[in-house]
Length: 191
Image 1: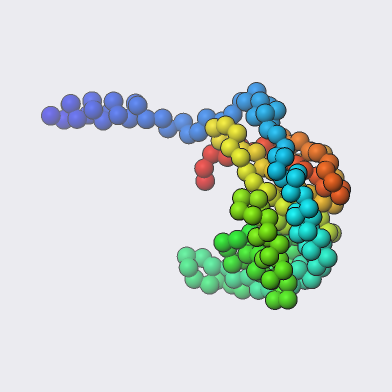
Image 2 (image 1 turned 60 degrees about the horizontal axis):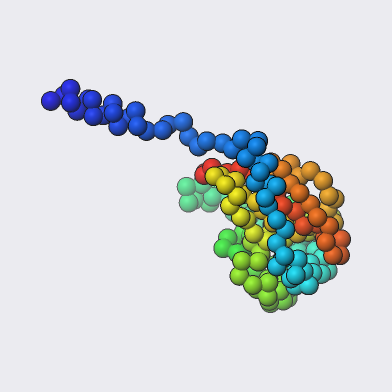
């Protein structure tokens, strides 16, 4: 009785793959990056992105100062461990997290920012970031480009074109008012 059970268990274990995810080869990454295209709808909608850009750049100092004056609660296992003052040169905003939500700006900016953000439409903005140095980015979308490979579409202002090392590879195009449209390839295999 024990022997058949042991054989069954060994057979099942040998069928399992414990090696983890298979990573993309350099050729697969190159092929995915080469196949990535700049989205014509993003380019056609630049006037709406420029409206958000103009607003964020006009109030960049106010937004960064507001966020730097906020307290940030550090929690461990659901218990408050510490409260610290935020201080950063850049802040990222997106919806769904109270620390990063687009409503985490001064009250007099909330309605206009919400309006500009939602005017872009569903699926046309994931997040945006603003810096003291007036650097601004809008992450438009992410696309699956293969097993574990993703292409990010970003619009950047007051950045320089070139290699972005947060990605495995990237390609830039200069569009409109000194805007860089960046396609960035990254590989992710779960958490």
